[in-house]
Image 1 (cartoon, rainbow, N blue to C red):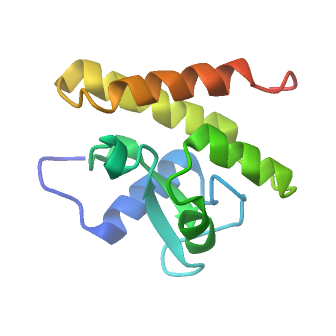
Image 2 (tube, rainbow, N blue to C red):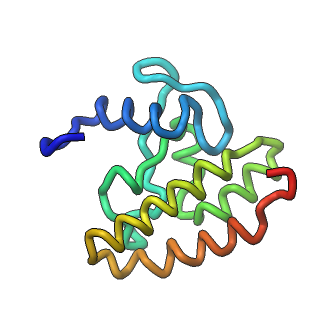
Image 3 (tube, helix red, strand yellow):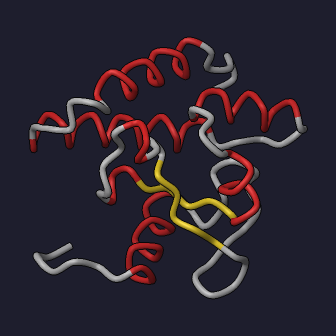
Length: 130
């Protein structure tokens, strides 16, 4: 990505390219400048989540706002109760990338246990068809 910081639009483009052009929670199609898409912190800042691109996923404004402070696993459960098909694999991949970033860069101690617990829960409850 280079040494310069990406602006918001560039970050969204990178995230959509990396994870697919859909909301990870409800799978509505999103694209830069069309459906109100947001970059959402997978690990909320209140839980020690860093502001790094590995901790950002694409979500529609509706899902981002409704998730609140629910963990990724709790929100996936809620999305499924609503009849949506959240992209569990993208969320798991993002948590793994974040865990790798912790290892490579150090720090972020507050978020490490949160990421580890979410990975355990999401991979344990992974549907058999995946």
